[in-house]
Length: 113
Image (cartoon, rainbow, N blue to C red):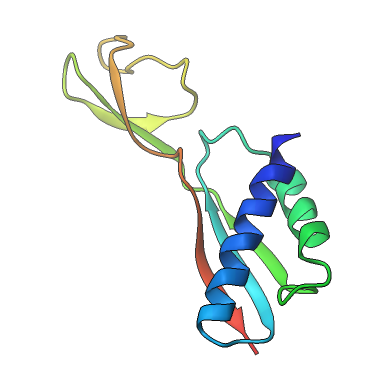
């Protein structure tokens, strides 16, 4: 389950940011996990709750935004919503695509007490 490793990395980012800001309690963490990132949101949220126990984010509310995938077709230039990496261009059916969005995994907001 790679969600546990991702959760450990996310909590490390949160704890370093809290230490840098001299904050002792994190109440909310908002994550952005793109629809193409191959991450199960529920599993990641559970892992974040487990990994954060005993730290500054213990008991924090974890939220996940799931921005959709977007791609540009290198053959015809069409920009479209990419629902999976196996999808072809809806305009010309080419699979020569540049993924523009949807693969990110990042901490976008940290709420503090």
